[in-house]
Image (cartoon, rainbow, N blue to C red; front, top):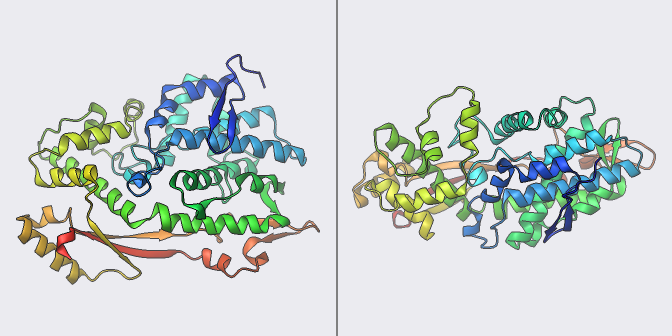
Length: 408
């Protein structure tokens, strides 16, 4: 692996110094498509609840690459063969694993680009960048898509204990100040091994695995699915849907050209290269700029919802384990229509219901296996003496109802 003349170290508040290992990685990080991640919030609108949660996808991608460097070092020290080409490909794949995120990350997933997930968009962008870098990303793309013959490499990118999860739990815990999510990612990595082309954990690491799974569950309920964050992100989705509806009816909304294009686009066809370039012009700034413009719009829905986000004067949200009775929702909607002189359609942007789910451990697929001293493998839920590991394998669904505070 060639040593870069531009070898850089980046000071990270969590891991200390992160090194950029070679010229190719340096050039990818410097590319405008990657620099855009500086303007994509890692945690959507969670900063409305946790003011410190201002970190970006750029932070996270670099942190995940750093953990991948440690994982490669650990696995090689235990006899796992990873070539220099595979090593670089791993770093590229983990750097670019989130490059398909749009403004405010998961908050607007499937809303701005309706037919593609961020994973699909990441693949399209990798292929686009592969042309720019003359095919040097091909192996990274194969590993990312799980087409490479060494399947354990894909697990390091996308698995139960991948570098993505290990970084975002630690990083999000740090920036929110929520101690329950703090995990020792480096300790977990030191106990990884590869057996039969699968990433496993040494038996002595069981308590670290348990802590990781519990932290993942707690962070989802306490942070990612916090009811105020959930209410804010639902509002942001409603704003974009209202804007799309108004545009479809001929209204002109004075916002950036990329955002106008995607709010006007109704195609379900595969995204084109030109559209991909336009998507790479989109970031949080476009959406925040739109909200500041729309807060004075003549449409009462667009105006009111935009003001709610900007002023953090959000809808009231109730969460419970059972679905809300349709009759109750209808009663609240009718009350809101009368009080604010809204049509039923307009009221639907202020009174709505939905559901969220939390599954900390997918025990039915891609299980976490522990390597016993005798060489046998055992699935973590069978080895654990804690009943909560079994509970963590069960999906928990909760239902929410949003409406104006005065409607309760």
